Amino acid sequence: QPGTSGAAARAPSTGKPAVTSDSVINLDHGDPTMFEAFWRETGDAAELVIPGWQTMSYFSDVSNVCWFMVPDFDQQVRRLHRTVGNAAVDGYHVLVGTGSTQLLMAALYALSPADAVEPTSVVSTAPYYSWYPAVTDFLRSGLFCWAGDANSFVGDAYIELVCSPNSPDGAIRDAVLGSSGAGKAVHDLAYYWPQYTPITRRADHDIMLFTMSKSTGHAGTRIGWALVKDREVARRMTKFVELNTVSVSKDSQLRAAKVLRAVSDGYDYDGGASASRHRLFDFGRRKMVERWRMLREAAAASGIFSLPEETSGLCNFANETAANNHAFAWLRCDREDVENCAGFLRGHKILTRSGDQFGADPRYVRVSMLDRDDAYDIFIGRLASLK
Ligand code: PMP
Image (cartoon, rainbow, N blue to C red; front, top):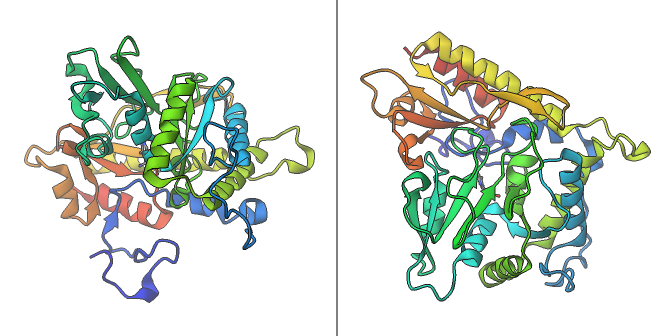
């Protein structure tokens, strides 16, 4: 059982037991510990010391809509998007949140008319990220409510959540309902980074969400950001964060800014002294290519699993053709007698998230591809042996 072995056997950064060949392998959450190996090698580039007297005030920049955002965080977010070319930043407000989860809630609050008679419907194309229904409905808000699959939605007042590349299945998505009239879209671009997918265009949607958790792997820092075109929407989203947690940890923002700076420095070819040989997206892509190769071989060796077909495109960032190597595997068990793939894998000590949590068939599971090498290798070995 996870969590029952002695303290000595625990990995220091997670408190989780260290894995051995007969351990339960937990690939349910997308815990991005794969990136630790990269950050262990970067020396002091992403290190930070905060003196006792610093970051004490609630305030950071009272002239900004997002008055608690540390200016260097704002600058490093813009710089990284300009470096990668995955999202437009000119003319956008940057907002910081306690993870992009908080900003997702902030967007639902900001886009729901306060005077509507009925709660605004929140929809997303199935299979959708399992947290969308959970986060939308847990407080039973009078402002908005979960209304399921966007493809079967009828009506004109809605908020469509568009995740691209999509969790769980990695699909590249556009809004199916679009932003028109009373309908609005929120684009969750958590995985629109070069380690996972070719960067084929500079996204310029009205509201775009990003997170440290999936871009650099710093999920524990709990920092996400939103790029928002409309000032009034940005103001209302900021109001939500205020009413929810007052502001966002400045210590975490400083750390995030430092980490983002280290990532951009890795690609700052004109930067002279600031150019670094540590290149996060190169590391991430190498890892993901290798892991997807191992996974496809293991699925073929087993013969009872299928995976989404590999797609690729020209990556404007890497300047070469790159495959979609999603952060999750959307794995289907093809054995006739297995109706619940998550239960079947649990029987083999592999924890995954069942398809039914994503509004899909329980023959599917979502498997995290971002765990440490040791856990991933054990998972691959076990998967290949299942018949
Ligand atoms: N969107 C998607 C699609 C995600 O997978 C996640 C992380 N699990 C998030 C948003 C939120 O991430 P965080 O709150 O850690 O920033």
